[in-house]
Length: 250
Image (cartoon, rainbow, N blue to C red; front, side, top):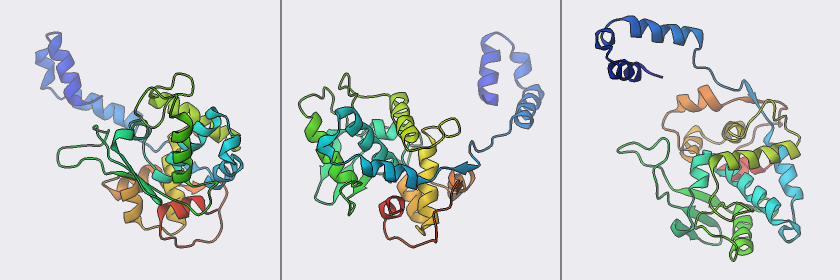
């Protein structure tokens, strides 16, 4: 809710005399004082718990299509630190693959896109362990679902084989959190961004790299809403060259 929308609503019902008064300003200030914008989480979960669980989902040939789907979705969320909206919009027609990377060009506007600032490409880097490698897992996932999928989007439902919604992705990530021993009464799917970027920061990844990976314009956004202490400390800080190494090396 903002002052402009209140004014437009009042105007639509013929209350033009109130729009320019200070009543709206006072009302908005009262809302701010009563419910100031605060970060949702004061701490975050240990990424290592999820990573160790994902390692057990191997070999890929032994997984059901449901579990294979949950694994690639979780690896995407952990290693890219992107919003659910972005992950559900990854399109195979705008994908380029090599032995070490998979790059997606975003072909639609995202939440933070503005004139002069369009979302960057989403890059997946290969990882030394096949059990945790997003590139290896993605390629196997595409091969396993090739004859079933009815959409060109990367993530498709394992029931309808069509593009999923952000709420479906959130539900999948919540399943993995539960299986990893994370308290889902405290942490929801959106907490992946904070957990991933906080883990990278703790491991010595530069703020610039974190901001580019998560597609944040301001460091204040990361520090205020996402950077959190983990529930259980992960040990001595180290410096990793790549974001993926910091997040998956536990």
